[in-house]
Length: 297
Image 1 (cartoon, rainbow, N blue to C red):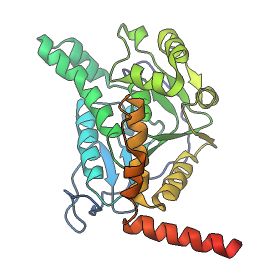
Image 2 (spheres, one colour):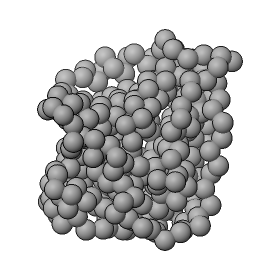
Image 3 (cartoon, rainbow, N blue to C red):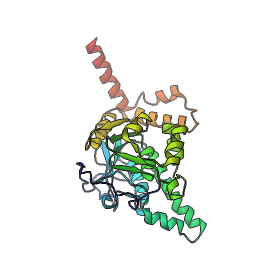
Image 4 (cartoon, rainbow, N blue to C red):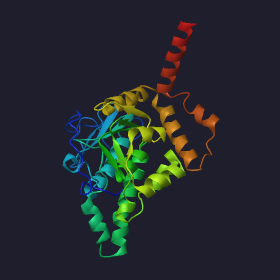
């Protein structure tokens, strides 16, 4: 969770990055939407959000601070998650502009939290990061994180809140919270234990050591390793593949996995499967698959 550029002076990587574009309008899909195509986009100052395509893109846009998580950026991420959930996008790629995915919490925010005048203000400051991670994880569409440069503290929590992760081979990860005299918060421990297990979580959080994309892949924190400059493209390919599938069973699958992880796996699989029988997207996909199967036989 916690870190900023104050402690890291990374070398200039000069990796090709997608250029953050201007925000585009959003479109309704399936459930009731709060944002509609052809209306003015929701304004953001610290991120760029495009939900006008099947694959939405959410780009942290504070490159001068390595996308450190300020109070304003955390609040915008919470708002963006709500916009995405009500949009026509089928999947989402989450990335960072510039030389890093995310360098963790902005030192100014940490200083404000520590120096808050009362415990309620301190609690609210620390809780904001948890609300951000919960909001990203609660997005109904599948989220794919594109990781490059540095992924530190709160940046790791943000990545862990996404469903899938692709990292460039020279990406550097670290969790320096204990060196800062604080525990990893924002739901980071819970998510890391879920993704990489208790022993590896203890090692990485307690030692605060840096680890590589190769180690992250071996620990099953990331799904794929990409060449330098290619994580976004590969993440977009994965997101596009998932977006091409019928959306209802995809969302049902994501929700079912979440229920199992939360220990609330009471879903009736037979009843759930029946909900897709009349879904137009599911019917179309099923007919196409069966046609292709008959042609091959």
